[in-house]
Length: 410
Image 1: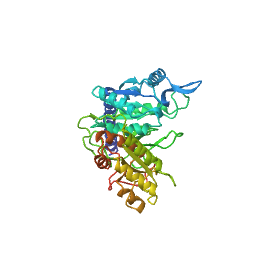
Image 2: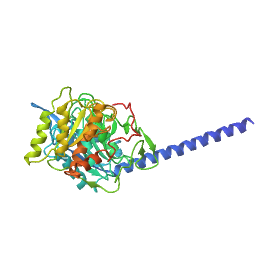
Image 3: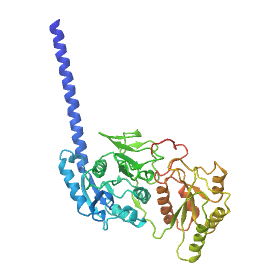
Image 4: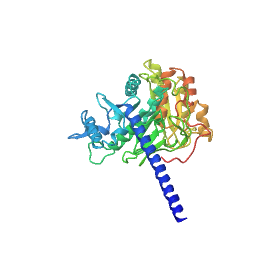
């Protein structure tokens, strides 16, 4: 009997060992397959400038064309066992390399052209960019790349790769790892400090911290820790996975249609403060409109709280009437970085609604600014078409009534 029990025990041990061997073997095979798929990815790195590749000079930090590519090669050689998790990449550099504070919509077009020209040659795109206007660029690319079906990643750093303690290396490597994944989301994202953020929901929240970007009104898409994980998965059985609140907006993934931003589009932003004098804005609308040299296409009104303005101020009413008279479109975006505009809650908000001021819902000002540019080029001179389209969810930049949620971490 004891002998029988001993045989049973030995058989059990052998079965467990075999099962573990099979499991381990399958795991090793799976990891090898994932690495092979990653290695097959073709990635284009587009280096536009920014802090990430700057070097110290007597006049302060400045861009250096040769430094970043050399450092990236060195980093890859330091971790040969991890190199297999990253696809093959090429790097193109813009000339000149720009601090992002010097960028304008013409630079958005330059990036759009590069991606379009190289779209069939590469599986993913990583854009190295300055942090100051990164959210504007990410938003602009999301509108300009209609039907996008490949990952476009925008990243940068708070500290240059040339500094001993920096965030540049982590942000570049994380972006390349993500760009090499089979399940990378096929949209424009910002990757920063291990967070993957929808580009047109992002906002720079700190000039000092490594976690420089947040997503005030939309969940973080994913994050890297010791491993990668999506935050809000609904269905992992499709590629790419579908995330919570993700809308398959019109034309997404059908075929790429690139829409460049129209030159000389004039979108202006007014930040409300108590007692603001609107007469200078009224005068500029009249002067530009009557001069015959161009036009003001739109104003984004950075309003108080839930979307309120000084409705008792006659100068404000005159400004709104003048804009409507000359076909200047008016958009309402809250100064609060979190929450949404609701023009019907207070009389001050209803006043704006009556003057054809269109609610920006829960859009960031960065997304609203890029969208206003996009629509002015799409429907030139047609204020009604621009107003209607601004309220539509074109590429995930705003929430509907049913999927808006409060209390996301910034």
